[in-house]
Amino acid sequence: MKELLDDLDRWRADGKRIAVARVVDIEGSGPRDPGAAMAVSIEGEVVGSVSGGCVEGAVVTEALAVLHGERDPGIVTFGYSDDDAFAVGLTCGGTIRLFIEELDW
Amino acid sequence: MSSLYDVLRDRIRAEAPVALATVIDGPALGGRLVVVPDDESPGSLGSLGHPELDRVVRRDALAELEAGRSGIRHYGPEGQTTPEDLVDTPVVRVFVESWSPPPEMWIFGAVDFTAALAKVAKVLGYRVTVCDAREIFATRRRFPMADEVRVTWPTPMFEQRGDTLGPRDAVCILTHDPKFDVPAVEGALATRVGYIGVMGSRRTHDTRLERLAEVGIDTPEQLERLMSPIGLDIGARTPEETAISICAEIIARRTGRAAPSLRDGEGAIHG
Image 1 (cartoon, rainbow over the protein chains, first blue to last red):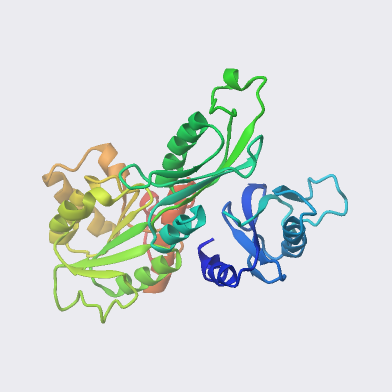
Image 2 (image 1 turned 90 degrees about the vertical axis):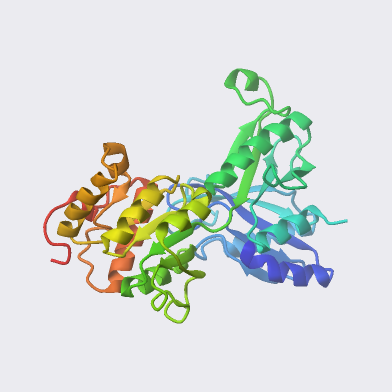
């Protein structure tokens, strides 16, 4: 989160709504520890990362869905243990859980 | 009035300890609590939906903060924690994220190895302090990468600040000089520091053991805490390679992995 603060300040000063995705859990091999975070502005700007680049694209989609009210804030899971064959996975074979919410607090 | 985020952000920036607990699953999804240590205001801000849950999570968050850990914990909606109490209640999953001040590394001895070790330690996120009693060696010019350079003997350093060291911190003694090494080891052993490494050849190590015994440091518990000779057995030769071997040993000790330490082997260190 620390590395996101400058961008978050700027976006907030510009009055942009922001969603934050944080890694809350990892099973098996995962590139980033709990606490790794990325943020997405309502205009689609992105800072930070939550994996080695494997799931960031999908996270942006989910984060924008939260901001647009198309999905509730909550946990999103990525990985090969996922039943959804179309789910985006991590190339290292692990499973990663993110909590995505709007930064409105 | 400052929002929760403002408080969190300001403390993260100031490298002041702070934890954020968020309900990520359960009845009060999105509830959150910002937790700071006991002796500081405001204590906690926000709520997870029940005062007893707030109290229990605050207690656990302070422990996570002390250990520098982040992770998910499970509770009942009213702060229940025992398995019997959790039967037939919805589970509240709380993600506790903690921001601790950076771990400390104190390096005794202003030698060539010190500059290399300070550099590698900075990469790993340590706050690095270099100490040497010799004014002409302990200079900022020689150690620009260190956060602090102090002209001091080990004993006053430990007397003044030894009680701030904890399990995440490291003391590396690179002086090779018994009149400096012995009080540094003595001082470090009196703290809760997680890693104590002492540089020197195997022969230096043997004579050092004799001198430590003279000041009463000879119990297995005390000697078990000393990584001496310092570093993993990776055949390091240059100061930079040696710095990597020391930092790798610190990581391996913390994670409990069986990487081969020089201490536990025999034969030439640079062979």
